[in-house]
Image (cartoon, rainbow, N blue to C red; front, top):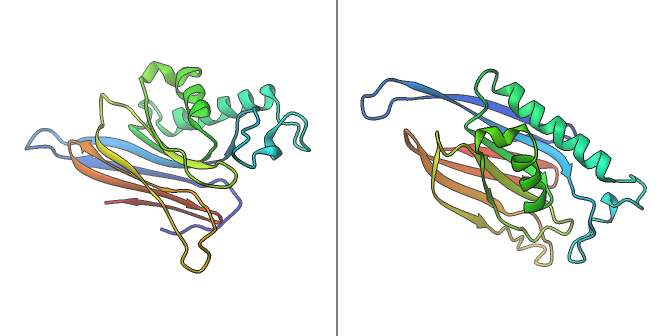
Length: 186
């Protein structure tokens, strides 16, 4: 799946699994481009100046927490009565914003865990995954660096690879290159 847009991208999959002859179960999986989930602190190692209180956006704690609340409401809403087992996220700044989303919103009720690696992106933008360990267990995860032979100095977001068990083994690759947002479920 390839998607090129400046709009919010949301993908929801409902996967039915049959583990070892047991009753078939369903799990909801979603991918959400949260479009610039930045904290309000300056990171001297990245170009996050656009999302600071003194920037043109006037990015402050009120805007940050409003965005967090809207994101958690979308995640809960997609899940209907049962929040998604797995949520892939792109355009997040760092682990801090993920911790705020998972532990400081009503998502904390569902015990989501985080898979995240800092990427070399110039703006500090990463991809991540949150998951419910009561439904999905992570076997391994790794950040796969992207290099461009035609432009060795270019830095972009890593690909996040996660392998785990959702009744049976399942693989996820989350990719977010500027202008392109791809999710691959194998």
